[in-house]
Amino acid sequence: MQVKISDSIKYIGVDDKTIDLFESQYLVPNGISYNSYLIVDEKVAIMDTVDKRKTDEWLENLDRELNGRTPDYLVISHLEPDHASNIKVVSEKYPSMKLVGNAKTFSMLPQFFPDFDFADKTVTVKEGDELELGSHKLTFIMAPMVHWPEVMVSYESAEKVLFSADGFGTFGALDAQEDDWACEARRYYFNICGKYGVQVQNLLKKAAKLDIRKICPLHGPVLDENLGWYIGLYNTWSKYEPETDGVFIAYCSVHGNTAKAAEKLCEIIKSKTDKKVSIADLSRTDLAEDIEDAFRFSRMVVIAPSYDGGVFPIMNDFLHHLKIKGYKNRKVAMVENGSWAPSAAKTMRTYLEEMKNVEICPTVVTIRSAMKEENIPQLEQLSDEILG
Ligand SMILES: Cc1cc2nc3c(=O)[nH]c(=O)nc-3n(C[C@H](O)[C@H](O)[C@H](O)COP(=O)(O)O)c2cc1C
Image 1 (cartoon, helix red, strand yellow):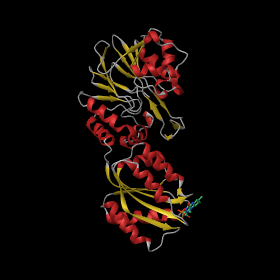
Image 2 (cartoon, rainbow, N blue to C red):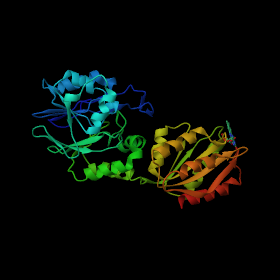
Image 3 (spheres, protein in one colour):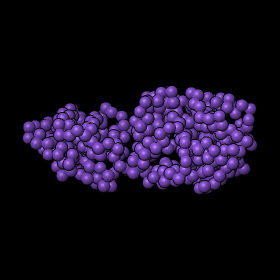
Image 4 (cartoon, rainbow, N blue to C red):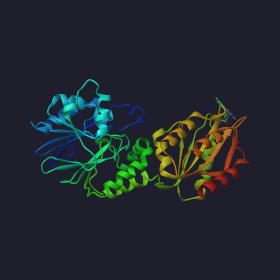
């Protein structure tokens, strides 16, 4: 896909619409883009490579935009293979090209390319270092653990462009982007960077000192207008603040009785509030989207059957993911189902208590196999507590 950035900054990335699962776990019905850029000035700098699935197409794009020039630098902002796979290929093609990274980049690089000697090719940069390209100048800003330790972003001051690594990335090929950027950007953020809110905050504080007119991420569209809105969302997400005041009902069910209770609860909650209420059957929805919604909403109800002395594995998996992604600062209520020794709530509570600042509603509704009349006032009570 052709993307116009400026006369000197060229898009040389590629769309991947045949990948089954991004990072072997995320559904990407609209594919994914691996973005790569070329800055053409007195010196020529490549800004990251792409996944090895797209080497040939990327080299064609690079060749076209180089237009006979030889690249002087390859700036490596992130070593994850969807961006760094072609470092060796392009280094062999242009032996005089220098690799620009930080100390961590070059300590990790040989792990990925053990049979290639980069020793005389490296330019090691640290926070605030600059690289003059002619009228363009890159300043390097370290962004450790957003979301790998070697991550750094680069600010180009002539055109005021932030090359933001995986920050501000989205799922979806460039020619198949949804109108609502936030939808896939949020799913991307919470699943990939969610755990690293503190580090994202650190980066946003550094970025706030820059005059940024364009953001060039490693996935998804280049952002060139209304940047305050995108940065505002990143600020909310990385502070673990809810974006939507409402209730996310996350349930699972083996034979359907817990599902009935979840639907009834949804009906009761909706009758009591104008807040947004969203319900998901965790067995049948995309886990990454459920994680996104859990972070998006201010309140959540988890509803699950008991299973082998614990909780149904689908819910177990969901809560495990929320825990490792740093879910916090939310209000949560629980409903369990069990036929002989209900154990789901106890297991769910163990997860929730390990999370920071999660307020658990006092009422826990226990359904015995199938919902009964006596459960309705309990669900009413729980609804009042989660909305309160
Ligand atoms: C493999 C399996 C393990 C179960 N383990 C428990 C258990 O440890 N304690 C319990 O009270 N019920 C247990 N149950 C029963 C279910 O939790 C119970 O029947 C519940 O009502 C199922 O809800 P559903 O109709 O939404 O699937 C188990 C069910 C299955 C299929």
